[in-house]
Length: 415
Image (cartoon, rainbow, N blue to C red):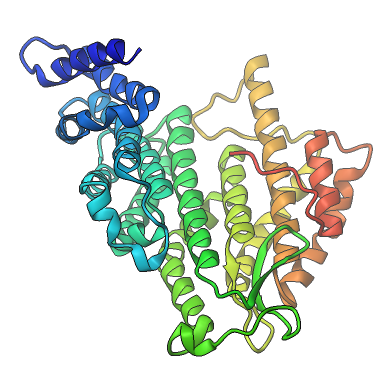
């Protein structure tokens, strides 16, 4: 089987290298072939990694957007093959520098190329593919590696989300293109949140417990003396684990604070339902994954993100009370609804309501004091979703019940 893959790989290399006879379509297909072969052959792909990734880096700055997009789609699987060929990098913060030697620098080079791809002003699909590639690298390499590039990543994502929002409002992107781009951005932020949370939790000492809160989220707290073995706080260095958690949260907030205003814009009442669905699902996922720190005054780091979102959640959930509101797809979709479009809009609205209810439940369970009270104020709207006169999907009702009870029995948000 590998001999067949080897032949296909040799042909793909020739196709991407040949600038004289290979057409744009042939180069695009050659780049996509690298991704498929890397996934199938696994560690056997190792000896081709250098040549392949070099070609993909060159293709990522090609003139034609389809070639650039295809090269980014192939970079992620090839970097995965590079990392797993030598050995899986350790995710511990103490081992962060080992990744550079383990992956032979491929992850570094690919991430830098992806950062350049985020600035592609000509093609949204290329930007989306670069986001998907960044998410793949982050999940393979772990937070200690990503942290080295955090400042640059925050700057590029902040600029991208602000400028793309303006382009969308000016109707410079089609409905389908907008969904592809914003979906990739949400996926990248969720992936970054996940690897950050995994790193923080894995670095906590044994006497710090993860409390499983009602919303299925995480809150770090110190266990009682009789519940855990004795642990010397001095072993954690100056300030102990609390100082390290504060530093870790500062890292994450240096990224999330930059992009969160744009996420709030996504959740605006005049935005299409599919975009609000992404916003509510993103916030709920981050809130549920992250180990938020409790302060001495009882407040949580999550609170400042939750408060500005509740008015937007209220407005979105209130729409469900009007059975005549089908939903909206965006200004670039014709007002005359075909049966297919009506079905698409109906599905988008149901998924938006599902994620909105999910988000209320997670914030209510995770938040402290005032945030929990804000969640309780949404109770009449959640109850309205359970009324027989309200025509909504079962998943919406399930999440409304889960949010009302602040339990963990919530249907996962739609991607």
